[in-house]
Length: 288
Length: 147
Image 1 (tube, each protein chain N blue to C red):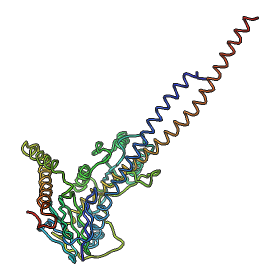
Image 2 (spheres, rainbow over the protein chains, first blue to last red; image 1 turned 30 degrees about the vertical axis):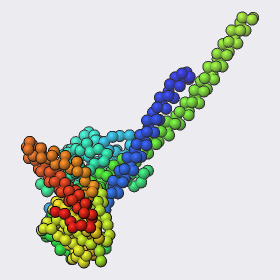
Image 3 (tube, each protein chain N blue to C red; image 1 turned 180 degrees about the horizontal axis):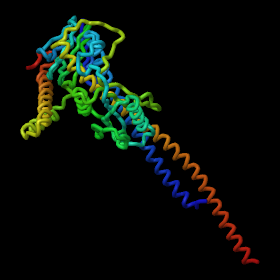
Image 4 (tube, chains in turn brown, orange; image 1 turned 45 degrees about the vertical axis):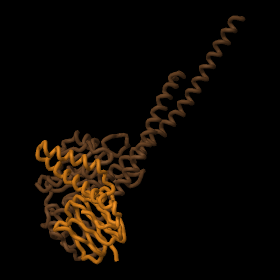
């Protein structure tokens, strides 16, 4: 049995840990709100861009013609690339591992040599131990990346694709289901799958300067937008995973403090009892 | 009949308003004015200043390229970057212009140069937009547009 003093020291240490995890929980909560707001703020652009592309796809019959645009053209897959979005920092439960595992499973499913574009340190570290080729890594994006910050990523991806270095590109990231729940998700980035709109409107647009030119400008932005959206989504997931992990840690610490306090009281009582016995024994030996 | 106008970037909604009378945008094939009952149109837009007229109110938005879509009296501008004139901080815009000019003078490698040229263009655009707003304001928003 530990002495009362040792237990007291232990309690103090657990208490300060609980304070830290509590603070981290609050920070993660506020970051999560901001990340969610940013994700929402980008929605209208994403939706409208998707509509426009859907309209254009409809008008040009892109779904069938596979020779139209290099970013749409499907070809036999010999090499694939995975854009893996993970947090930079840990202390957010199983989220980074789950996402990295999903990517790892994907490489097996594909059955072709694949390379990695790592966004975030955790995913990079996960695959550094494997023989997977890491083509590029982006670990300095911060908590709230701006649209301009992600353009280098889409550049690399689009360049590699058009140069024929890879034949298929996937995004793997943590999809935000709700605060308690985030799941790894795989999304095909390239070749672009033209979105199809259920409510086909078949509008006869005037295209300036022309359909092909508009498509030329539209497709890279569509790719960029998808990467940007995925990063925002992954950020919201990361922060909420961290919030939950830190909440659990605080709860565990508080429970531990309770147990330790009980043990401390018991130890103190024993000490008092034995001291009392000593005194009584001493007095008795003198009077005897 | 009026237009409903949305100017959106990947980061946020810059301008959303119904009851707009007229939109003047820097289209790829030259300046274009969209009035109600415009034919469906999808055009690229150049970096420049877009004017949105709503009654006696006029809003300038500096945009750095993107798309403009017109359909059923809905005008959607998918901008790469956009800023309303009143949001532009002159001091910061001026600083950005100087920074970009300096980089151009000092001549880094080509990549830096391209970046600097682009940001110089952006800075000039923002200055122009906010200047026009100021020049207009003494006469009140109902006065004739400046320039």
